Length: 389
Image 1 (tube, helix red, strand yellow):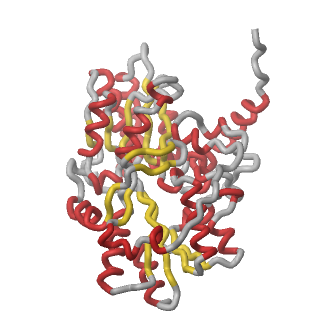
Image 2 (image 1 turned 135 degrees about the horizontal axis):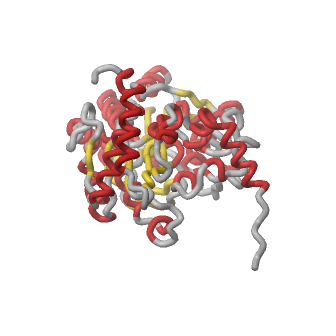
């Protein structure tokens, strides 16, 4: 197939749906976590869940780097912008994410902080060149997909001798998060989350390849299928996961072969490894502290590390009260379980990152199924607790 419409073909979708119904054994259930928020939106936008038999369910995973960034790091970015007279540059999704006391970057900007939305690291570098008398900080965030551009920006700043440019690095790594989820008490001990297999990230895997997921698949005996973002990609990948489960296999398979290889983009990997290195641990919203799951700037480039250039206080941070975003990111709850959904929490007045981000689960529910979700949430709020025997 060569054109996007071919990946949305109705007849092919029906053929795949029939194949999934034949393969899914009636005596068991299949819970498949889609790690990436792009998959969540595809599932809702194209009604993929409605094409599945009743015993095949999708479990929403961490979704996107905006969602999993802890409040502490957002609060730090706001502090850098407000107290160090800098120009803070960031991608658009971060602007409206609420921090402690619902203080967001866009609110700080409204109150006078110089915070600018950029579309690329090149924009941030240009702002630094155009404002030599001001310190410019790029708020770097993203999974492995957006990490190479950050590395390029740091190398370029060093090559040009830009003295007023630095990076607040918040890049996180998906294989470590998948392993952490599979080894968490929610999965291993309490059974609050059932996961039989994964739909692996697609754009991330175009950079790192499929190889990095193999260790977790072997250790936890769960199949991983790298899936593209189109509805037929998701359905074909679901069929591949179901077949592995039925056959008792736990391999890493690649449905997205038109983009992803086993080894990935080795040139991009080499670039990132030259500029960035692993952190011992990093906090993820909803997952807690995850070992070896994020990157920091190497000492050779420490001049461009905002964490070393600016002093940041250690004020206590906290999530918005009653927001279920952390539990939703772990797959423990769905947006319909959150009593804020559709009441005080809307895209115009978001209480958590899951409603702000273009890849967040709450944003997907709101965009494609808000009336049903609001009705379900209302029913759960009104449900009387069972009497204690």
